[in-house]
Image 1: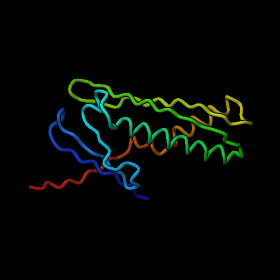
Image 2 (image 1 turned 180 degrees about the horizontal axis):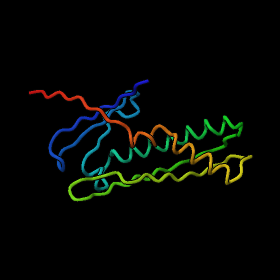
Image 3 (image 1 turned 90 degrees about the horizontal axis):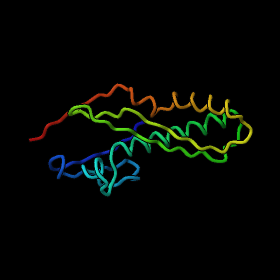
Image 4 (image 1 turned 120 degrees about the horizontal axis):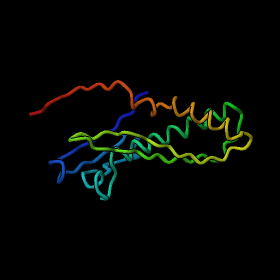
Length: 141
C-alpha cells in the first residue's frame, strides 16, 4: 500500500506560501505558510497534519483491537497535541500527547489503559516518528 501527498512552495519563508494536496483529494491545494505554522493564519501546517494522522491512526487501531477483544466500541475520541520546539535555529517535534475519551462497556479502567498503551506503541503513525526516511532529489534548471 502506498499513499501520496504533494506540497508545493513558492517564495521565501516568511512571505512565501504553499499548498498541500493528498492522493484522496481530502486536501486539495490546501493553503499553508509561515503564518499558519507560527502564527494564527488560515490554512494548515505540518504539525496539525501529523496530529490529525496520529489521532486518526491510533483511534482506528484501538477500535480494531477492542473489536478483537469482542468489546462494543460506542465511541472513541482522540485529541493529539503536537509540540514543536525551537533549539537554536532548529525546530523539533518533541512530543505528541494523545488525549483519549472513550465509551466502551464491559472493560475496566486498568485493562482499558493497558490495551490503549499497547495500541499506542503499535500504531503505524507512532512508529513513523522513528522511521527510516529516504530522499530522492531532482534539481531542475
